[in-house]
Structure formats: C-alpha cells, structure tokens
Image 1 (cartoon, helix red, strand yellow):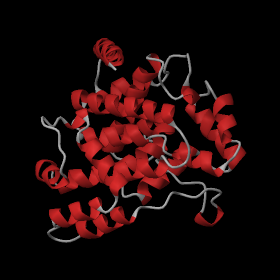
Image 2 (cartoon, helix red, strand yellow; image 1 turned 180 degrees about the horizontal axis):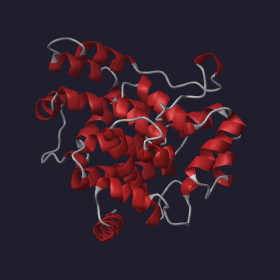
Image 3 (cartoon, helix red, strand yellow; image 1 turned 90 degrees about the vertical axis):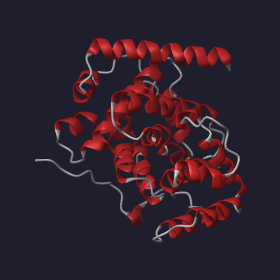
Length: 288
C-alpha cells in the first residue's frame, strides 16, 4: 500500500526558522491571483526590491531559457516569457536571495547551479518536463542545508564529517542529531515559497528514490520524473568532482538502473549522453 510522505516535525516543535518571504513576492502573489494580472504593476513591484529585481534579470538571461537577446527590462521579459514563467523565476530568485543571507556558501551555490543547468538539459533531452521546473529543482534541491547551518552551530562540522555518506544515511543521522533533516526542511520551504507541489515534493522525496519508483511512497508521474532527472544530474556532477562535499561518494550510483528504466533510457545511450555532458562541463570551465 502506498503512503504519503509525512514531515516528522510539527510546527510547534520546529528547531529551525524558515526565512521570511519578501514583500515583493507576497504582493506579486496577490496580483497573480487576479483574473487579469497587470504586467506593468508587477514590474513596478519588483523594481521596489533592487536586489530581487537584479536577481530576476540575471535569471531571465540564464542560458537555459534560451533567449537570443539580453533582457534589461522586466516588462519586456514578461512579454517574451509570460507572467507564469516570470513568476517561477521570481520565486526562485527570491528564495535563493533569502538563503544567501545565511553565510558565504559559494561552493554550495556553484554546485547547485551546475546541477540546475544539467537538470534543465536532461529534462529537455529525455522528458516532456518544463526545463525551468527541472532547473528550479536542481537549484533548490538542497535548500534546507543553509537553514540547518543557521539553526545549528555544529551543523557545519556535521557536513565535514558526513562526507561520503549515502543520502538516506545523512537524513537518518540529521534527524537523530538535530531532530530535523534538510530534505524535509527543503520541501517545507519550497511549499511556503509557492513552488509547484511537484518541485516541493521532489525536494523532500529525492532521498527516497527507491520507494518513490516502486510505488511505496505516493506521488505523481511528474514528481517521479523530476526526481529521476535530478538524480542523473547529481550523478554527472559527482563524476565531474564538483558536487557539494556531503555527497562526495566514490561508489557507483546503485539506483541508476531504476532511474534509466523509469525514463526508458538504455544504458548505452545514457553513457553517451553523460560523456557529452562531461565534455560540455570541461569546455565551460576552460572558457571561464
């Protein structure tokens, strides 16, 4: 019998605090709920938050969106992308900004960006997912880690000693040691920040890949596909040796056959695709 994932921590007993949502995001949510949202009003709201405005423009011009010309005006961006897509970009930028205030996490964000870009590429090549959904999941799949860093003074030491542990083991130890785990926190945070349900669920359930694909945990096909794409992106990134050190495991990914079977991708085709992606990463590093 399938079961829904249950978060182990009640609101009253939380040993952590989720970052506050910016007023600009809340105002935009209110406008988006109207029958005919006004693009100019939304652009004006975002302009009041200089940091968010700059971050949104940066995301709009990210390579995975494939816009031919650089966008410098959000009203123009809305015309090209549509309000729904822009709202998705605003959510992601606002969430990333809020987590960036915790402390310097350059390596964390470098890894997250790499996995996000790989996720978008894999989604485009292998699935009918919206590549930006895959990108958002890749960028925020470990968004609970900065929250844990802020909440627990000894969490940074845990990250160092946890190097090489399997994700399920990390979740178990976190829950035992901190009465919280970054997978559950990440899913909860994505919910609070208006991320689509499937992205929030994928953040929380990525650690339960085998149970998800076997049907022991209840979720829809989009969530399963998102988790599979994220798993492949993390594997490619890990092979390239740039992945966040907490997952720096030298063992092969045991779940890989399950993921490839779910996506209907033959082993040989995946190995060819992985090799191409590794070459692209190497080329990108040489240019930068």
